[in-house]
Length: 333
Image (cartoon, rainbow, N blue to C red; front, side, top):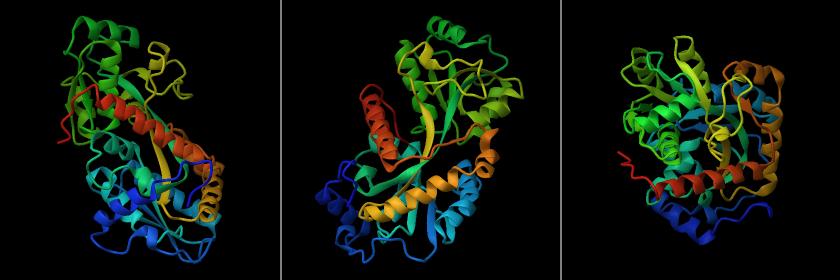
C-alpha cells in the first residue's frame, strides 16, 4: 500500500521478485499487517556497509535522536556486500510493520541502472520511501602537483590532452566513477578512470601525484585540501556554503548535478500510516540542531521533508544513470 501521491509498485512484479529473493518463503505481498501504527518493539536500521564508514557513522549518530522521536529503541545493524543489494533484499523480506528500515545510498540507484538483471533489481519494486536523510556534494579535487588550478583550466587541459587526466574513483559502479564518465561525456573529451578500493588509498596517490584527481565527497576533499590538493569545482547544481568561491560544474555545464545522498526505506507493503509515522519521527530527529551541528563542518546537509521527496530522488537517479549506461561501457567487475 502506498500514498496516492507516489506511483504504486506493480504487485505482480514485486511478488515474482520476492519469490526469487526469498527462495520459497512466504511472499511479502501475502504477509498480513495487523496494525496501522508502529508497535513497541525496537526499530532496526540496516546499514549496507561495514562499521566505521561514513554512512555507518551518520546512522549511529542518528540512533539517539531518532529513538527519542519514535519513543522506541533504535538499533543499527550492518549488512555489507554487493553494493547494498544484500541489505536491501533482507529489508524487503522483513515484516512490513515499520520495525526494519534500510539506509539507501547512490549505489542503490546505480546498481538498478547498470545491472538491472541482478537481484534485488529495481528498489522501487521492493521498498517504500520513508524519508530523505542527508546529502553531500562531491568536489573535483586535483593534485597539488598538477598544473590545473581551477575548473576553466581543467576543461582546457583535458580537451588539449584527451585521455591523459587520470581521475581516481572508489569503484567501478560508484558515483565517483560515473561523475567522471558524465563529465567527460559532457565536455566531449576522454578522462581516464583509475579505480581504488576506497578514498584513503586514492587520496594517498593524489597527494603523491601518481593520479591527477578525484571526485571526492566534500568531507574528504576538505581533508585533501589541507594536504595541498586544489578544489576546482563542486558536482552538485549549486555551490557549497562551505566553499563559496568554488564554482559548481553546472555553471559551465548546465544541468550537471551529481551528489551523494542517503534515504530511509521500509519494506514495500508497509502501511502508509506507519510510513508517515516514521517519516515524522525521522524529520524531527534530523532537524535537531545538536545533531546537525556534529556534521556541519563535513558538509553533510540533512534534509527533512515528505516521503515523496525521496521517491523523486530515486526516480531521478535511476533515470539519469540508466541514460548514462546507454552511452558508456563499464565493466561492473
